[in-house]
Image 1 (cartoon, rainbow, N blue to C red):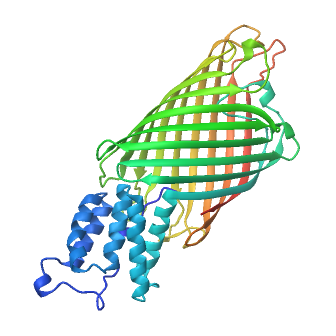
Image 2: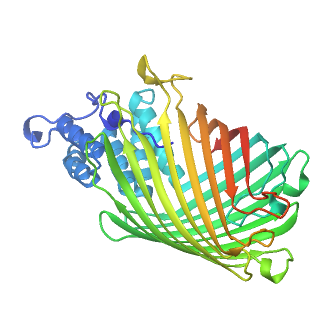
Image 3: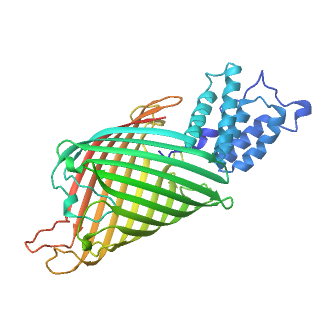
Length: 438
């Protein structure tokens, strides 16, 4: 969930008593003002300035937990995740030693510490059930009659995801990940899916605002316990982070990418119908943050994207070029009469996500069954809506529930001699899914 509360970094209380307050000879460093300046700099996205403001506090009050909380928050914002974990852990230790483990700062430092840990190592397990009005296997492969069942069915799906970043600093990051997905239908066994995927990503920061990255990923997909597709892909990307500005709507970052992918289908067909080959793509993705109500300290995010792809296959039937546009937005579900509470469970985050995905494919030739020998054109539109609710949140694990609804409308100009339209259909999927994350 992409939610940010503006005042989450502002201090609620400053420690006195066991902490040394700057007076007399220490007036050169006003601890309260230094901490407040650091909080304001962090809220504005200026982590370096926040660390500079904290430098005098580290000399005057080295055992002030607020110092280490803000230092950890600054390093997390800069991308120095392991330093952030170390500093936030020190803040938690100091709070426990001083008997302040029940204070609000302890909870906030704990949440930020958990966030930093999960950006290094995260495990997620999703399990759920869904109902599909038209069972089909829709991915990057071309639409074929044998992957559209035309029948309704229920399904059970589980997905295990693991990611680990052994290097995560301001200038360098290296991340490895793996995912295993299993989809079992109640009746239509031939559409049962077993998929295994993995990736390795390296990113290097060019300057304070730009980053380049290279990512390798692979997918192995089985249908009905038989090998179906293997993919290997390499993606090169450049990302630019826009300066933070106090506006109702602002740009967050822009990503431009180029990808090349090798597809290997594991089923026998006539030569003209082979889909094995290379896919080249170029895309752009823009992320936006929207703050709709100035008096309410919450933000929501949206993304706009476009990808152009060219499929060069070993056969002739499925050579094509495609244009794909995507849009998604996430909105927090807040109590309209109490803006600092969530709508369903007051102290547990809930949000609504909407996704729109449109794709247009133009083929080099006509379909073998096309009666008029026209060049094939396909258009697919997908609308998705997800309601997510956090059920419990612990120090090291969370439990969430997701309610999904998705409608897909596919249209093609292919018409057979008997007036059939095999690639024109729609489908509706609705389901519920539980997620455990560590």
